[in-house]
Length: 318
Ligand code: NAD
Ligand code: UGA
Image 1 (cartoon, rainbow, N blue to C red):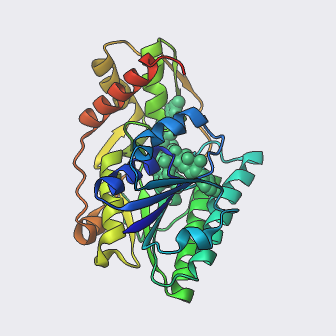
Image 2 (image 1 turned 180 degrees about the vertical axis):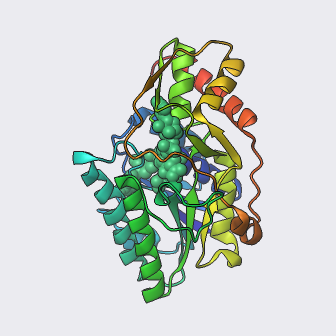
């Protein structure tokens, strides 16, 4: 199959491209290399995909790209491009969230109107729930985001449903729960904690550290994306993809101290605005219709992220 992956140079997108290529698909990776984090990191993310001849990189913004040309002949679009990051979505930065999360999704959906057979998998987020009323949280729980980022991810979900209803596309919406593992974005907690511990710097914890997340290893997320892209039962559905690894931030620091063998120097600061207290996914729908069954426990997943960051930190500067 020929598949367009938006956000291909990012953390999750680069893993998705490698899996698709490994399974023999032809992949067009679209990414505009936003400056949210460094271009060098994104180029390193893409190195594996770029070494495969059936991968083609298109450096462009979804808002500007010639989507009619890119979508021609495609069977599936996996839409991961976004301005991520919960805590940085206030104030002036919100313009970036509107542009990359809402306007870009609308541009893609408009272009897809000309290709009725195409399937779209949209990467949404646990942040749409805000502080959920029920745990584990099922997909039909009230969505009341706590951050402007969450508002834009939910708005884009609604756009996807609206275009599905009005133009008959096949859409699958996936709500990822805090993803981690090799290539995790440098603004995310585990990346910051591990790097600080390896470099002997302080760790800042926002709040009391007792906030918890249903942490999900990136390979498990890729399994869920693949099932959403290829299984008939997925069509028209919204699925939670959570890792079954609920842990507090303090617990993660304890595990990392054991794995890295150094005592963390932790400084507690005021809770960050926009941060939810807890997340825990009900994944029974994804288990039933996608065959989703996370395989990576937190200990193993953290080990893999620590090993990856050791190689990144030890690598000579380019
Ligand atoms: P990332 O920032 O590493 O990757 C996103 C990529 O999209 C970047 O390389 C960026 O340059 C590109 N991009 C952004 N706007 C674009 C545009 N307009 N046109 C083309 N490219 C554009 O982020 P990630 O952590 O890999 O997240 C991928 C997706 O998953 C996002 O939609 C995010 O909201 C969602 N998500 C991530 C997590 C997580 O824990 N990482 C959790 C829930 C949802
Ligand atoms: C993550 C992603 O960054 C979002 O893109 C995504 O949409 C969201 O998951 C989701 O599941 O929907 P978040 O849960 O905030 O967001 O993940 P982290 O950035 O890894 O933070 C986890 C916790 O650690 C938060 O409570 C945060 O405040 C805390 N943290 C983070 C710190 O205490 N210190 C830090 O230096 C970084």
